[in-house]
Length: 472
Ligand SMILES: Cc1ncc(COP(=O)(O)O)c(C=O)c1O
Image (spheres, protein in one colour):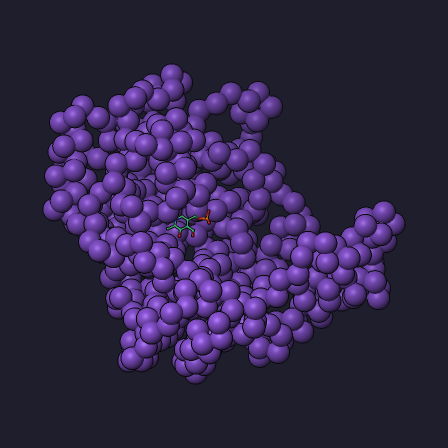
């Protein structure tokens, strides 16, 4: 009963919140100090006394929501954090209430079956054979496989660990030897370098692939790097390509790199944390051409697939490689049993694992595949229009044509530092941009991800940037 009453209150507050955000009635970003927020939320008293409900719950929610960053706001143009479908958010809620830790099937058959379904949908889009319902065939029939993880960093780590154990199965037990390297462009996500450290290969053993001035891998020169690396007696665990790069949103030449990796029998990993979502695009799927020739892929559903944070997927072309990546003993989990389903536990770093498939599935259930494709294509189309508009302004500099919903640009006429401009915009609260550097030059960076954003907002942003640059 209390649960239903509290729930209604929460939903009503969230409904108002979404409307206020979409209509830009409150600032997109509003940052108080930690101390102030503690006070506004009355944390100490509530923690001590409990019983948060009724008008006190309303006050708490209102203070909480006023201190959020509003991803549904038209001026939200900062980071690649998804704009969840409300139905998908209810998926997170259902998962929170049922709390089925579904890594072993008996602990959450519905959640595990949905994860199985979503992984197969993704495998289908890549062009890799499904995981069969009869999981005994896992050992006898070659097919793809995958697992949902808590984020792209963990998915990258799992993929590269799979590649390492595939290269030399003894490494899992014995530890890394000093001859192991990863090949990746400097523009790769930092989770790749972090993985090299975590897996014991050493961060210094990420050999950088040659790139053009925008950080895209140059395939011919990459081949030379491979030959030199092999000649030096190093073993290449994997070559990693961006689809797309976090900073610029530009894609590496996947098809060419896949062929090169195949020629040299190198594991080819595609980091599609952001751009993997183009698997569902009608207009931009071609940017992933050649993906089926890769050995592994990751994508973040919580970026462009309107799924609440966090939900990422790791996919491999051959299920056996993932099966061999983890083989551990845990008497309370791994034993003979009646088993009508599939245990994801032996594919993942995690032991207690949330049912991430439900929120992911519900993002599609809200609008269907065509609706998802339209969302993705609209975001990218608008980014292309934004690029044309900004590039036509004499006081702005845009270094490339976008391939995704990420665009870097700078106010070139101003004496003011780009970061100072960003800070001033944030202080005002109408627009929230991120920033990155390309070739040691600082750029403003926009990610068009809120369906509320229009070209008029981009024009207003340009005006706001000029004002911010002037007010020193
Ligand atoms: C290309 C790329 N790879 C990996 C990641 C890491 O994903 P997550 O933040 O979900 O851990 C990101 C995040 O922005 C990314 O852009």
